Length: 255
Image (tube, rainbow, N blue to C red; front, side):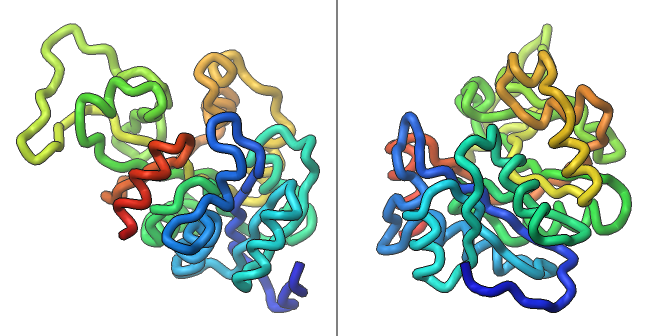
């Protein structure tokens, strides 16, 4: 790992990147127009204003070598860590900072402005933890369990995250507009989190909740334990790459 700067670090962006994947093995190194996917995520994250340091946290030397090969910073973390948040916390153990950003390593379309918006919610002191959402474009997205939905209240605090359409509607559901958009009450959640240092360590220490285990959504641990999650809407195309089909969609967008 390249030597870290000794300048004060206030905001560290961490990109957890596991090599193993059931549906797409080795996906951090999946080729997208001559660059590994992790490089696309790294470069987009680094463009966000206000980020002092970007680090890829991985359990695999192949990923670390690839990151260092394009001039990035990588840190090897234990393969026994259960989640991406645990990898972020492992980086926080080694690199003190005020704020940590968790950018999913399978989000090569991540918008720098989304990172900036989420960081601002925490930097301003409004929330100890934050995330972002985007519009739901179609009914197919609404009904797809791989697309996580979120509801927020009028103050910008997340209410609930689910793989199901929320809230349940007894009346007619909105009909998609000709341009492919629809005015759904819920929004699409993007896998991006920002925490204060204290909140990150608190989150790591908390036991998983029943709703987290049922939905298989780690952020519901914070909801269950009463940690406020601020959320803001940013309009960009987000595709988390979990399958070969997802990878092909991203390749077409990034042509």
